[in-house]
Length: 65
Image 1 (tube, rainbow, N blue to C red):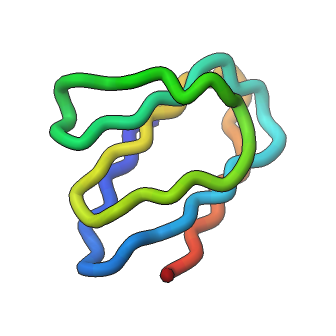
Image 2 (cartoon, rainbow, N blue to C red):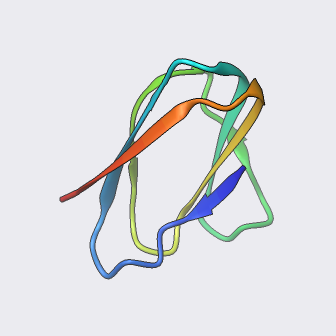
């Protein structure tokens, strides 16, 4: 799942449960960096991407900041 924050403000994305094997971050949508975690809270600024690879979908909650 590839999420791009299109809001004019940063979001904190909380990722829990599911079976996540990889989480990655990108500023431009083409170059991704492995985060090294499979759950937690991640800051996603405007136009940034958070890509999640999973076999069972996790619960993802967005909190506006």
